[in-house]
Amino acid sequence: MTELEPLSFPGIDPNKPLIIAGPCSAETPEQVLTTARELADDGIHIFRAGIWKPRTKPGGFEGIGSPGLQWMQQVTRQTGMLTATEVANHAHALQAIEAGIDIIWIGARTSANPFAMQEIADTIAATGKASQLTVLVKNPVNPDIELWIGALQRIYNAGVRRLGAIHRGFTAYGPSPYRNTPQWSIPIELRLRLPELPIIVDPSHIGGRRELIAPISQQALDMGFNGLIIESHCDPDNAWSDAAQQVTPQSLNLILNSLVVRDHRQTTENLNILRGQIDRIDNELLEILARRMDVSRQIGLYKKDHSMTVVQAGRYNNILDSRINAGSKMGMSSEFLKTILLAIHDESVRQQIEIINKSENK
Ligand code: PEP
Ligand code: MN
Image (cartoon, rainbow, N blue to C red):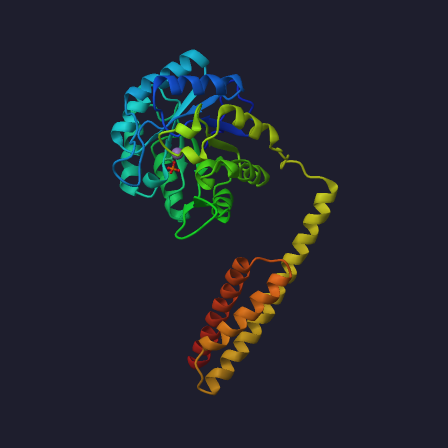
């Protein structure tokens, strides 16, 4: 994806985070237009609303469907806002593009499905409007970065250059403070792999609760992501979908004004000194790891000479707990410690097997 264009829009400051706001679903013309007017008065330029709603179970409100497209057109006429909606198949994409929707996004259930992604990509290409359209691809529900990148590639291959990603968190099983766990390391890896791709964060679907919108938004900006898409409804408690996570335009305005936008492009003298320290520490870490692998290889040879198995599961499970315990006392999370210690152990085992094989083939 080498020819991406920035997501700039007339009248929107390209140096500020891109803000998209609006209700989870378009419900009635009054609800759409009241919410849009209030958001526009607060300086929001891009209005979101779901017209076709993917619901986990049948029987819920599945979206108002195509009549909602006219309400979106009214939003543009009355407020000058740009509009954004979700598409999940050929018919949605075609209707949204024909109705002049400015930004289409692909939802998390759809980006997990390569057939649906290809169908939407083919539809976009067939309209001949790929180069004008802005398309945002939400992460798939499951934490699979390759699937996310694959979905983005299909849209890019259709000729879309105004392309972005939306991070909306990943399905978690069991109790969690989030509706969808953020697993920030995944959008961070996406940033490293596709540095030109704008990434927008959706705190509404990550948090699932109003009170989490401000802290998640601040985290997103602190990590240098490019914008926020936030659900806002003129009467959130009576919303037909996602009521618990929607905020009034007034609350949204308060939240946005409370956020601190840090300048991540500037580097100061002190920052350079600290970065130098990080570089040296990383080198030390690598050297220490290499020393540890060297000892592992010696152990490998010893085990071979004494006909012992390489993996002695009991031993590592015992020491894992005590190391996690020690590391936690140094201020690191046990989840992080477990990941890193298991990765080191896996590599040690690999190195032991490698040296044993080499010595046998001599
Ligand atoms: C939405 O944006 O309202 C939506 C359905 O989101 P997601 O695809 O992230 O669940
Ligand atoms: Mn929603």
